[in-house]
Image (cartoon, rainbow, N blue to C red; front, side, top):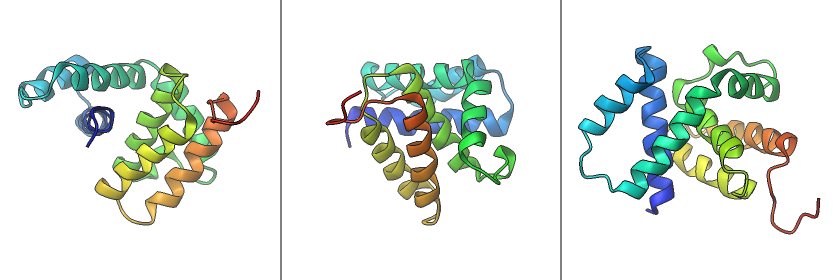
Length: 143
């Protein structure tokens, strides 16, 4: 598994802990990394950055998710799915150079690993729609 995929998975896990435990982001970070001293600096850095963006821009991210997931309230979504979406949207917002298909494909691989099979289509559709609204780069598409 690549460093970036591992970072995205770690970000998902931090967001899940933050979301479910209702703890301060710094507390989540401190306890999370204390249990994972083996994670290298590059992997940890990208995961921390995605987590920071997702937390700092939570209101904006959640609004985008709800806008692009009609008939779904955020609190009714599976916690893993909600936080995979937050991770993907945080990457769209904070790493504008990452092509949309990469962000979406990575999210789908993570969903396949951590969530239900039926979540794959849902995550794909929501992230694709958000990516288009945000103008996320797509290789071969001229702006």
